[in-house]
Length: 103
Image (cartoon, rainbow, N blue to C red; front, side, top):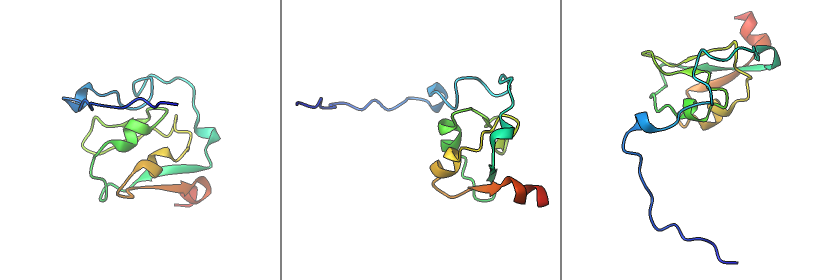
């Protein structure tokens, strides 16, 4: 079986042209998913380099990139951990909900 050969890679001209996050802009989700979560992602702002990789891969699009620091809307976060997995500088930790409530 012959595999197609990629002959050209097209680099995005502007990061603003790239699709980021989930399928719905932040603030438009209407059904809370927080009750599904047993762990929550916590962003360590001192480690974050704002590469936005977490926001690009977040399936729910709950990471707000509009401010000076990244923020997670926990009302709609399912706690899947994809953002933590994709963070290459380990700036996102998954914390058990029971431990978070004790803080």
